[in-house]
Image (tube, rainbow, N blue to C red; front, side, top):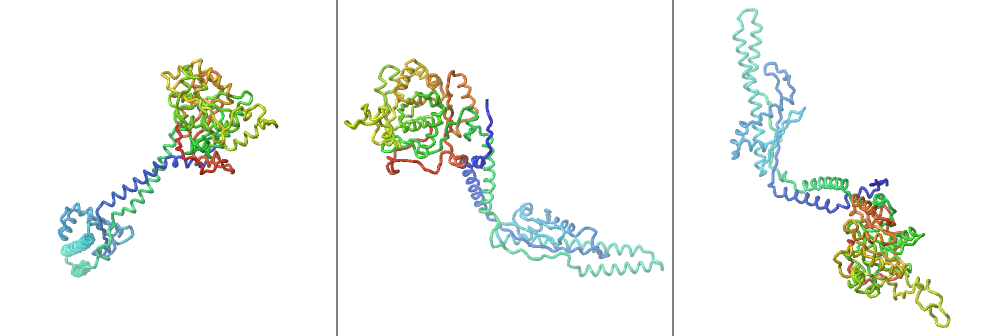
Length: 552
């Protein structure tokens, strides 16, 4: 059954969607910014010039009373006269423009604000001079149109007044009306001869000193901001639909078993010191926690053989086997590691040894167990001190342990630490599931159980192949490794279903692997307990061997 995590959100839960997809965000932002800059940088320069035309409403030609229409609406109506093809054709002819009227109109913008008596004429062109010429020409045409409109109104008023005067009967009763018409006609004729200033151009357009467009830097900045917002939104959307497990408590909830340890992300997965296998500084405390939790989980009946597996490849089970073996060995336990993954072995590389005959040859009765096991040196901090503490009392006469051995385990320690016994895969069998299901494997594991305190078995991923099922039946206990950012909810659910069909599986718990430093800061896992990693070897003593990545 799929469980939902009840843990409260942390700050890292809001940062993780962007941080885990930071390269997507960076690439998207850089691409949008660079492409926007390149696009606008290739465009030709555009120059913009503007001029203003002041328009005054003279009112009614006869009465002089202002028009009932608002002044700004009248100005807008007059300004709209410029957006005609006839006007554009007249302007084009006057300035010698070689394009079409429509092209010229697209270069001009005519605006007027409510409550103002000004019309703004703006023109764009490929050269500074041309933009100023076009703006001034349209402004002059607007003045001409407005003045012509008022002159036409005067002429109409004069004609109408004369017609009224001619139709007026000649009698004493109409003498006053006739005199009024003659006075009105006289005023209109004077206005016709000396028309008032209705429209005039103010602040003529001049050639600009710099182009108004394009602006690559400004547009690139806007593209950067917009693409960053969209990329971050996309990262959160992808996180919302991402089914991979991101938090350790999600792993514990979905598997329904205890979380034994949380392992940090580190590049030092297969450290060596003086040619001996060692735990990296970031791994020492987490694997000691894992070892302690395994021991606490099996206090009543200590597990001697432990299968370490995962749901799918790439979750880090082989890395866990290697470092867990070193963690058990540093407490003085005799440790053997068996390569039960017969399809994709990695332990030889992890321990820095050469592959050779191993488990397959023993199962085929082609080799003896003692002949194919390999003693791998382990550089363990404080191991020599542990040997001295655990050593049995020496006889006064011989100055040696009473039983003749070098320690309580009966295993001699190397000069700088202990050893881990390694049983590699050997030749790849034709049918791995059948080989692992044989009774001979049970005998080999029983022999190892008798000879060692802890036997760790690196098995194949359970959901990938069926090889691990036989090992789960033979072993005393099992732990599974789940890699954060790799294991999905569906994978965890399927693994639980498979384990439910395997009888007598003693599942101790699950290990959350590859916790990022960002998440570790929020959880307090693995990165700094205030004491720092202990080592009895100076950092310069590392042999600089290549460290494989965490893909096992």
